[in-house]
Image 1: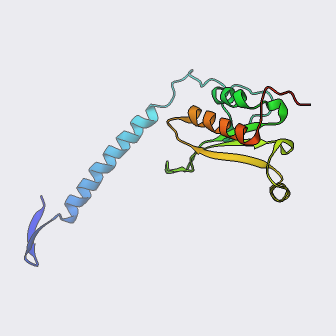
Image 2 (image 1 turned 180 degrees about the vertical axis):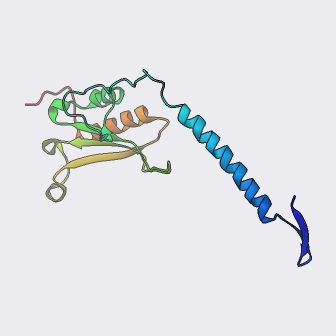
Length: 164
């Protein structure tokens, strides 16, 4: 049993070396038994894992965060014709290792330069016309529709007019 001694006005409990060695020996026995049980839990004989399926062709492991899901592409194509050179992307927030989000939901319309109404200096410097807007997570489709409508109006673009 632990001995009680008074040290610096406090009563402290101490164990002698024999008690400590006995405790240590008991713990080693318990650990040995646990390791024996865990080793006995290995896969039973005759049970094998199924082989990994073979994949033909190149497989990408990188996820491109720049795309437009089909339900939002329909909204975009309601106002813009991809054959005229318009494209769009939807960028979602990035999540780091700790689960923190960085950025927001951003919708970007790529306007072809021949239909762009930007000035010459802008075109020389940036060599492209991007129209971007941050969207609210609770109304993505509505935000895309409102922005497409506003950009189409700004460009005086009519999807129904046929171009070359």
